[in-house]
Image 1 (cartoon, helix red, strand yellow):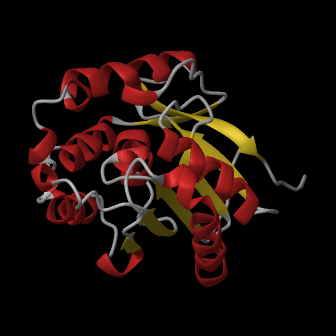
Image 2 (cartoon, helix red, strand yellow):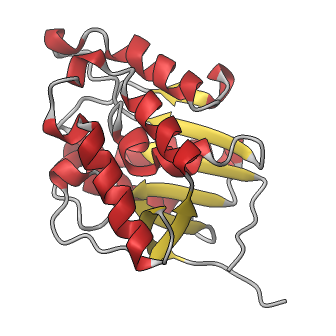
Image 3 (cartoon, rainbow, N blue to C red):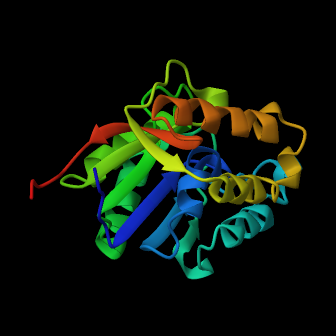
Length: 209
């Protein structure tokens, strides 16, 4: 199956979500299409995370995303369910401005309240658009991909380089390069490739040709 899209939008709740879930795919795409990355919370109400904005910008730069196409908003972390209407209206606005052909959001198997709120509201905001779910391993429960994207060593390296920009999270188990590699190896085995990232098809819009 060949996907086509002039504009692809990745939407995450917090800095690092997009890179953890889609970093390998993004590393393979900058010369193929227009990429936009939208993160809804900058996590700046937590003083221990004060470096996250700079680290997120460095991470996106390492993946080849122009700064003008990286959006970092200020919805309050862990309060997304109570901010649902505002998030919906913001995503509708993003849809009108970016006009994406494909949207990536959190998988429905994610237990984090912010993550699943983003997914619910994205499905409402982007009607008529293909929506695919990515996995953030630390907060998922029961994720199994039904869309696999084969990747190469260079794309794994790109993902690891992006994640390495987050010095704030350097000691977290889910930033361990060996864990990241093992996940891509596992999904690669499912599609007879050395590496792959896996996604969930939340809504597929397509034409036969």
